[in-house]
Length: 164
Length: 374
Image (cartoon, rainbow over all chains, first blue to last red; front, top):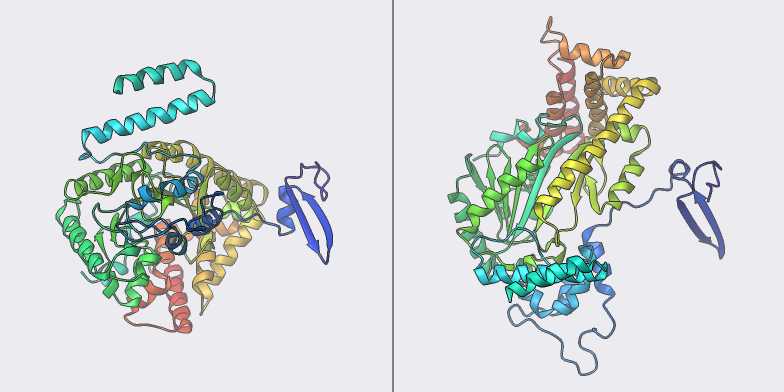
């Protein structure tokens, strides 16, 4: 689509305005949009992102519904509602207690990632390191199958078997 | 240590040195860590916060950082001192104006700060001048390793370093570069740059001033994703891809201004020089805005044959040795110094008392005038 203003460049900014019930549409290129003072918001603060994500919890996972007992972390006494209110968790154990509810948010904030693959404290016990490697291989295996890369999947499966 | 011992000087990360420093002011790596066996701060009592503070302070003061370190009890510091530390990027706004027992361990040369009880129990940062992320991460890793030998961090094999906010989970790393992009701004391309960085999943905000406003054309660019990526890959991506690309855009815009729009460029620099040399009252925002154009003009010298009347005037200010009193050496370091020392808390701390905004504006104008006029 061509830019309505300069009629030369490709329109990349599409603006729909509804004023007094009348709907108008504008299709502009970046240059013309800038000239008209139509900027695109370039930065979403993290806390805004967080509260948006939390307000849309997955279906059926609403806490404290019709007789369901609300999850409470035994170590810090936090509930999911408290996390929503504070935007920070109460203790490290919350990642385990609320894992199911936090996972969609973690995925969204980290581009789909659900597992750590960076630095590991040197004093981590050997079996934890092994556990990490297994988690990582499983994730890679899932991805390989999704991409239909069966050659890689077979290799990863062999590696996983070695750990068991 | 008294803060006035450092407040009159420029810090290392703003020295104007380091690789690609005409665009990349400084590089920073920050790590978020929490102690195992303690609640996160929001759920902590004041007594637990005090215990965490005592523990971490003791550890941090005992490790060898290769520089003299000092401790500041942020909760007990005066308002002006807190604001000063924020202006100098030694602590965050959150840390300065938070609540409960909290403090900061700072290396005297200011390349390192550990904020204790900010959003997480521990936030480590290493800051260096120019494009030096690799060196930042090497150093912060060494420091992190030393701390780790003395405390146990909250860590999960699956999710990595556990942080109070899930947005920092995993590596807990925030890699940032501070960029000076005046030519992209003048040529009206800054929106394009902002959109491109957004598409790369990066966060951008101003370096000075509050919120997202980028006073003085300084922008801070950081990664947002901390889980499922390795620290070294984030750094490599910045060093090999993001930084060269943005520096390239800014350089192209500077060359474009010089060859196609030199009257516009000359006008920006002339106006900045005229106002800064003559103003009697100048706000912090205006000073940042004008000094940015002076800095751009000075950086234009690297292009061979770069000459406009205003650039030549700046050049003569920098080179006139015949009358050093009337024309002190005008260098990037001088301009960077003015950026920092004319910020509100710096002004007042160096003056020795609090000033209202009119007096601050007068003092700021005076400092700038004397640096540019002698």
